[in-house]
Each structure stands twice: as structure tokens, then as C-alpha cells.
Length: 327
Ligand code: NAD
Image (cartoon, rainbow, N blue to C red):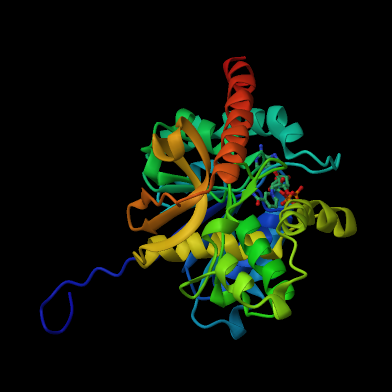
């Protein structure tokens, strides 16, 4: 009780990170560096690694915008977390196709999601583990949490990459470009160029109006480069971590601050974009309810066709995954 006789409730913002590898550690660092949360618990099968990541993060405390507590723990310690970030996995056998991780990733999440739910956890899951659209689907199925509280990072990272590449091609700052990759966070993803804008101006119109400046822009090549850039980074350094950590931090911020921010993420589709019952990368409004609603872009026929193909690929792998989850 305060001196004025009123009770105060101070809520700390608590995060659990399962998988203290490249992605997990960078997510933690991005979160504390931006002052987005107060408390992080790392959980990893490699306990020593989780302990060391926590201490290494704690060594930055003297430089952070505000105090944070970073520790290691067990699944049973995650019951009181507001958000759990899932970034377990292994990319030891580097493969160009993220779908190859499916069986292994499903076995891992199956081993701990029921344990988490026994703790009474009732927060949000943010799923990063690949193949992210299918793993997000099964995190929701295994947890039984509402669809809006289970969010995949989806094409969030790919859309940031698209804006980065478009920025280089157009010499316009990436922050002034709104553009989305849609569908699978994988080889079949689709660039929604017809709806890309530069602060309100449709990008295709801007390009057509200024041929002297933009005549060399090749949308097909940009889409291909965006899709392949993750693979190039992975080959060069054995992981991708900075971009995904910032993508994840944006989702956490949008929830904690009830931002109602429009961002691409893997959301559960129930008729939007003409499909049902899968998680796929689409723009959505994110706030304190998690995914509050999905925004449908007015795609052209070519984009719709490609999107239908990417949805089919996700559906096919959801079915493949059903067997692994049962066994
Ligand atoms: P990593 O190998 O560096 O880290 C994975 C960690 O998970 C390891 O520390 C490992 O010990 C731990 N782990 C494995 N099984 C576990 C279990 N049962 N319980 C707890 N921890 C366990 O790999 P990374 O580079 O951090 O990548 C992690 C995942 O994130 C991969 O699936 C990767 O493909 C994915 N990823 C996704 C995106 C995206 O945009 N969605 C981007 C980058 C990476």
C-alpha cells in the first residue's frame, strides 16, 4: 500500500524464449536493447548454453534503456509469461528448403507444448521455428489456444527483405516503402507488387511515371532475389538472426503496446484470400488481442494465382505433418 493509501499493480512484461541458439539469443538482445520487456527466461535442451546466453545478455545491462532480468529456466517456469517465443530447431544439415525441417521441428514442439499448457500458460506464442507456417498451425493445435494468440513470424522477415531490395533499386528509404511478401515463408512466397506503395503512391504507378529513373527495375528478379536472400545469408554465415530478431521484436511491441500495427505475419485464414484453415503470411493488425484481423490486399490475377499455389504447398505439408504429430 502506498503512502496515499492506494494499491498499485506494476506488471512486468515477461517473455520466455525456447531455443537459446542464434535466433533465440538475438531475439533476446533485440528485446532488451529496445527496452521492450522486463524479464526473459531462456529454455534450451542445452542447459549450459541457456545459462551462458542469459549471462552474456546480462553483461549488457549497464548500457540498456531500462532494467531487465535475463535468466535460464525450465519449461515449468514458463506458466507466468506473457509471450513465449519458439525458436528451437536445428539447421545443422543446411538445406535450401525450409520444409525439410518439418519432421524434426514437429517432434520438438510436440515434446514441450503439452508441458507448457500444464503450467496454466495463457499468453501468446510467437513462432519462428521453420517451416514456420506449418509449425505455427501445430503449435495452435497442440496448445488449444485461440488462433489470434498463436502468431507466426511468417513473411515478416521476407517483407523486410523485399523493402530492403526495393530500397536499393529505387533509391527510396525502406521505411517509406510498404510492400508485402505473401504466403509461405519459403520458396513459393509471392511478392504483392501491384499493391506496393511509396507513402500512398502505388509503386507500379510511380515507376511508370518516371521511366528515366526506374526503367531498369525488374519485378520478377526482385521477387526471386527476395526469396533466395535467406538462403544466401545462411550459406555465408550458418544462420540468419538479426533480421528475424527485429521482426519478432516488432510483433512483441505491437502486443505489449496494443499498437494495432499492420504487419505481415503467419495468421490463421478463415476465408480471407479465398482459403481456409491454414496459417500463411498475410498483412494483419496486431494489438493486445494478438492477431486482431487480417487485411486483404487487392491483388492482380497473376498474384492471386501464385498465392493459390503457395497455399496448396502449405496445405500439403500440414497434411504431411499430421502423421508426425499423431505418432
Ligand atoms: P540454432 O541451432 O542456433 O538454435 C536452436 C536451439 O534450439 C539450440 O540451442 C538447440 O539446443 C535448441 N533445441 C533443440 N531442441 C530443443 C528442445 N527440445 N527444447 C529446447 N531447445 C531445443 O538454430 P537457429 O539458427 O537459432 O534457428 C532456430 C530455428 O529458427 C530454425 O528452425 C530456423 O530454421 C528458424 N528460423 C526461422 C526464421 C524465420 O523467418 N521464421 C529465420 C531464421 C531462423
